[in-house]
Image 1 (spheres, rainbow, N blue to C red):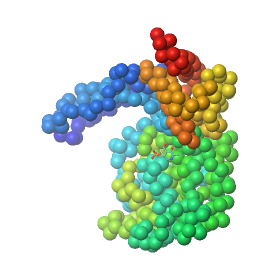
Image 2 (tube, rainbow, N blue to C red):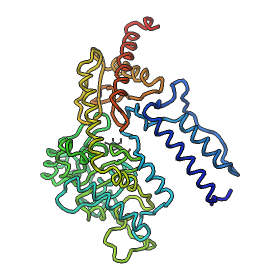
Image 3 (cartoon, rainbow, N blue to C red):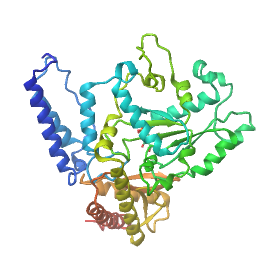
Image 4 (cartoon, rainbow, N blue to C red):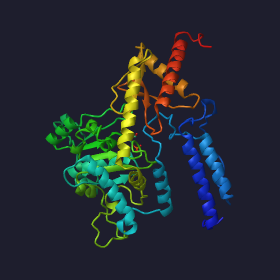
Length: 440
Ligand SMILES: Cc1ncc(COP(=O)(O)O)c(C=O)c1O
């Protein structure tokens, strides 16, 4: 079948998809996160590669049904999970728009307005960091690429030769710990975290910045999740000191609720961003009188899709204040949850609540192994019917139950229902642990 559908087919397929997406968004407040445990499968699919293709509407309908019926629904309101959001609808539309136009952001000459929109989006974010002087940055595939980019810049500043000639030319193992100086090692960077994955803990950024200044170390703040607090006037103080960072990771595909993938690396040293990434390629077209750098000169990616559009569109339609409210609502829900834990007979908090991530543990269990086993059993019990999702993780070597308010669709009623499920599961598993036969 040829690729270029006629207009009637394109429209039929497009409208069909939009109808599906619309029904899906309507279902999210009450949609189960996944299938019940006994129906989940993890094996590979084994269809052969199609030689001739099939009717597009049938294929689209089928894959839609299967993805929804057998999928894991991160966007559901009952997903109390890792840092993956319900995408804003404008974010979804932005993705479709970008996929259709397929702008190539490697060079300004071939992307033009698309690059300008990306630069504008970065400026909006960077202005909220509060750096006094110039800054620059680029969109990345996510937090990991942004963190690697921060490290590449730290290396580029301290060891400029390492960019062309390789890290081996540094002549010592680069490390980032004070005492290593005396041992002849070469500290160059400190990575602080604003919102750790398991607990949401935010490092003492001003204190770390002071150490970095004293030892002339690059400060990279991994704010993949927590740096989004720059969008909140009310809660921004939680990441006080972030403006002293040399570089910052912030992932719009986390707290800013845009679809994957969208990370951002920002730096207050634009020249070092270029030093770390600029590679000369004679075939790359050049824009006449360009004042903006080509993206391929400030990024680990060359061929690059436009990851900024979904955030730009969300901001254009909803405005920054929508994020202010989104963050405030989630902080309040998490604090209410923490109050509930404070009154609970079964649970206690194992870490303070900095952002909308709770670490809880069962009360009255002192043996770490038994606690981990009970926590895992409790999480299994709560997630077994597929309706909602929470997780178990390790913090400071100790098992904790992790609950995160991450969807903008999550309301008080979802939290109350989760708490009821937790109380019932705790009673159930503790009863089984005391007397395996007592459970009927
Ligand atoms: C604090 C932190 N940094 C970095 C990452 C990696 O981000 P990504 O998955 O977007 O690469 C995560 C992922 O959850 C994270 O929580």
